[in-house]
Image (cartoon, rainbow, N blue to C red; front, side, top):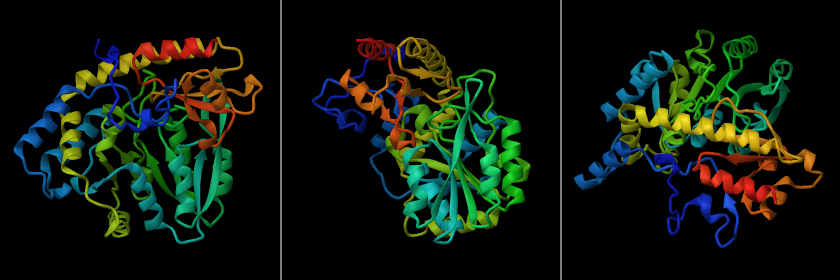
Length: 375
């Protein structure tokens, strides 16, 4: 099977593998997969290279890539967007930092759920804002944002913006319609703008769960920015291409003004890859989801059999949030590394007693990791 292939990353300068270069530590950390891109994506990139000219391309002019996004959102989420709502960005990190610059003044408060993706946790401080953390609580084997805390904090007039991940990184939960409606109600009543990072939205593993884009919700149409990309799903993050959906024209203008002169255009290779991913790779996408479900189930079973480790079943993503508090050690991260396994340190996400495993890899890697952790 395609996803069982063991890629040779030697000499590719991959960030994931450079971290532990020269050490006998299996890298299962940063959120890119070990899966070779779908062949139609590689073909599209090769075709562009063979053309021989890689000059300026204004993303708004790339009609076929724009239409591919529009069609993808319609097919996947029954969401009909207008072409002008689409704003290309070179990654969701520049996008949510641009959101802060566009809609906040220095000293304003920005709410973020925790634990969360490290660059998102850092974004308020980078932009001279006060970070307000909204904790995550566990309920019947599922992690969820503490909506009572959100209500309480959003009532502060200084809180101007809420940035969330949906699906949630690192905990893997998918916000359901009831939860999103509650968040929408809180944001609208307290005049809080919502920025929703949905970069993992095409990686729903729970077949009973359904992703709902934030800006599709009528109450949030004029009070939200939705961030998406093909990058995590189709393993093209190195091409630096993502997009924001901003239905409200005034919000969109402010976003574009904040980005002007700082945020570069998306590059032509990223546009070509995104178009191919969203138009030619449905079979590959479904096969990958099936493989990830199997990997997830294997990892849940195995991790929960190791004394001191515990994990819930993530509804989405290829990431596992593993509780190491039962180990009785100061650093579960160092405990894992000493056994030859390199997850992401939980402290970077907001909880030093956890680690985050990336199971977007050949099953062989997971089996090797479990063997090492059991020694």
